[in-house]
Length: 486
Image 1 (cartoon, rainbow, N blue to C red):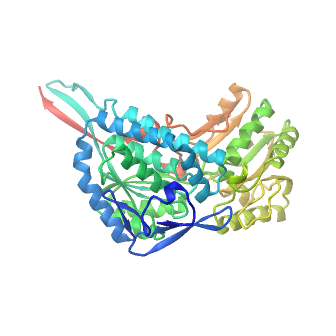
Image 2: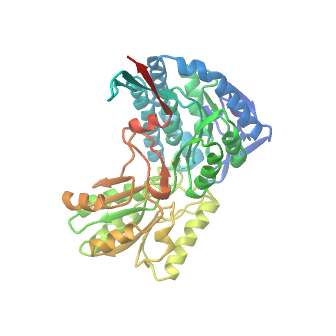
Image 3: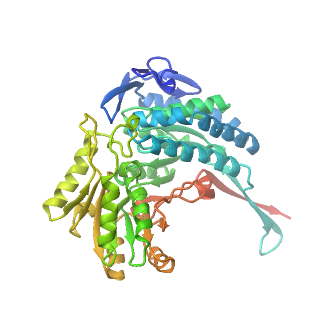
């Protein structure tokens, strides 16, 4: 890998390398691809461009490493995961700078991500040593039932660009804790953070071949190769619902164990009993963290008529106060990830305005070559606007005023997605509304739902399975039962 910067993690690899297979860095058969800083559009690095052949080599290495890794004592695996966490925290500032460089998010967001990402190693270091299984007499007598759990095997992990550290560790940590080995395909927009974490895992003492990384532009070729390989027994994917559907169809051909964390369209509900100041604080987190580029981001804000005016005024003032710009300038909000993302967000807002929506508040955007979109609050958004039905993935907050709970719930649940939701109000009322929302996760009087100790995932077309908590480990385990004559 080559780079124009002097960042330590970027200069640690040999020129032209960037694919990690069996503990060795190698060049890509397809050459290299460029990584740019979306805040400046400047070249950051050239990374080895992986191919299906590299993908197969990664599975070779993971398969060879599997017997020894799965046979290690859980305590040994636990200790190694704990060391990785310690190393991530040791290098937290440099990792945050690297995330900001390739992703564009603010340093505040990037530092928060590093801490969150490292916490998965701590959580699963603790889970790795907790017993899995059961024992007891059968109801009919005469036998005993022993239930045990084994690692699934080689796991293929596919991660997005919006949280390049946390999305990788949320998959790697439980897989390794369960005794699996992994092949990882990071997003081509942000491969550098995954490569840095892989280096730290090697420094911690994780054996060669346990974690293999294949960045590349040919995501379909790489992942399809893994899904077609009978040695790959698991796929965990985070990304769009459209791509998830494709992968599910491919996985069905071999009945591969799957976990899918897909798109979202999170409602943010403010009731008449809400503490408006707290609701605005929650909305700023739920909507504008990472510039709105999160699957859990509040996508549509439903505000009760009794508090709509005050909420809109307070939210608008907070949005107008946001500092937009490159991470190294102390910004609150960074750029969108690409020109395509900028065009998509622009198109959604322009269409809503053409249909009658009003831009009520907007932050200032500096003159720049980067993909900066002004944080925006809209009112009067038509109920059938694509802005309310499609995942915005940008710093845009459309407000819809409501006054009837049943009509509110009908609108909130009128979507194919069901990942996250948020409700602010007096606790009893908020819980009453929250329990009737079709979502896998609901933040009640808080604008953040992600936690390594909690099961992360959605319903409907937002995914299959869970990440985090005990459930995240179980995604990488197979259950076996022994019927023993007694």
